[in-house]
Length: 230
Image 1 (spheres, one colour):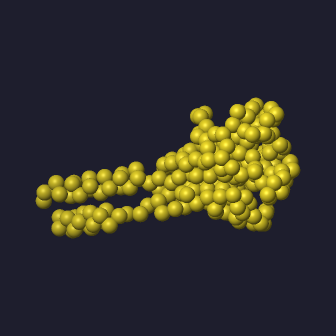
Image 2 (image 1 turned 135 degrees about the vertical axis):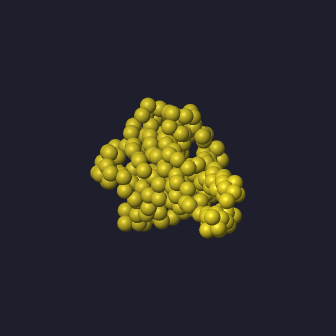
Image 3 (image 1 turned 120 degrees about the vertical axis):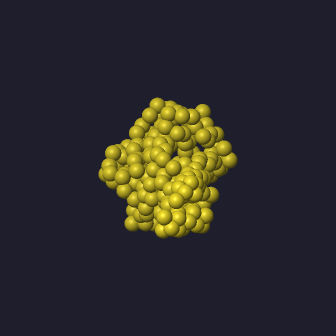
């Protein structure tokens, strides 16, 4: 039997799988660190560090680990969108105030919400560090607090999970830590005078959800047909 048709079919199937993997992208579009103690404004005791443009809370500035900030300033400039291709992605979030990393057992500054794919109203991942900013990574649930400030400037329930999934990928928060660092973002902020910042470091692991296309299934069916004929 001529093995060339079978070889071509298998090559085509592999190419289709490669194309599916290459086109799978999820976007990280927002971050909020809710329930910051001592804040005032429209939502006293519930304002936060976030990437909401023009709100009364503190701003959050995001950069890939070891890279440059992807947002800055205030208002619309605090918005961002980062493509999360399959693999591991590490980020740092810097807030212009050191009190978030005070390492108290019930440190509300360890609460983290991540928003994906244009949905700024509902967090896709919500996390906390149990026992302060050096504690174990856990999901943030409504048992910890009923509502969090979302990235649309309103309120939402925490996601209660460390994994987000869309039609193409799963995104898992696999690592999270907090620390106090020297000033990184005072040039961006409208709150002068703070000499130290808080930094939240986290890692997202992105994996493609296997979903064979109709074309791929057809090619595999032809492969089985040729094998049976042989």
